Length: 269
Image (cartoon, rainbow, N blue to C red):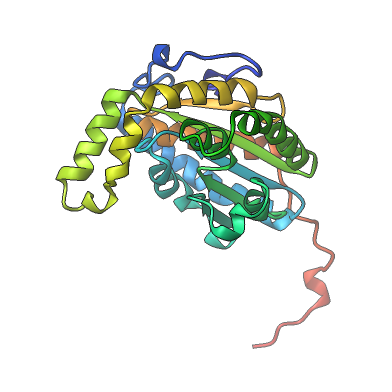
C-alpha cells in the first residue's frame, strides 16, 4: 500500500470532522495488522543498524495529536524493535524556566537526532502553534509568525541530512471520551488521568481549528504531514511503522566498506 494514502498534499487543507478516524485502508483486521507490525519491527531493527553504521544521516519522527491519541502507544509498540542506543525519544511538555527564556525552537533543536540516530518527538515544536494559540499564551502575531519559522527550521534539518516523518494521530471526539473514561475507571490506567484533560476537551473545536491550520501551513514537499486514522490502535501502530520502514528503505543507508581483511590478522585461542 502506498503511504500517499495518509500524506496530506503540501498546502492543502483538511476538515478533520470529515476525516474518518476509524477507517483502516490497507489492513483487513487486527490480527493482520499485528503480524505486519511484527515484520516491520524486524525491518526497523536492521535498517536502524545500517543507519547507525553509515553515520551520515538521521531520521526524525514527529508525533502530534490530541490527548489520548496514542503517542505513547506508538512509541511503546513500534520503537521496541530498535536499539535504544541509537533511538532517542523526547517528550515535550510545559517549557522550563530555562527554555522559556529562549526562542521556542531552542529546546527543539537541542533534541534533534545526531547523524546515525533515529529521533522520536512525543509532541514537538507544533505545541507552540497549538497550545500556545488555544490557551492564549502568546499574542496572535507571535504564533502566526511561527508557521514560517517552523518551515524554515524543518527545511534546515532536511538540508542537513535529516529525513522528517510528521504524523498527526487523528482520533474522533467520541473515541477520546472512551479513552478518558478508561483511564478514569481502570486502576491500572488511573495514574494517566489528568483533570486538566477535561478542561482541554472543552476546547476541542479550537484545537481542531489550530490543527487544521498547522497541517495546512506547515505541510511542505520536504516535510509533509501524514494524517493517521487512530481510533483503531492496531491500525495506528502499523501505519506509523510502515511510514518509518518506507522512509528508511528510501534512504537506503549503507555501512562503510571495511578496510581490513581477515587474512591480515591472526586471532589466537
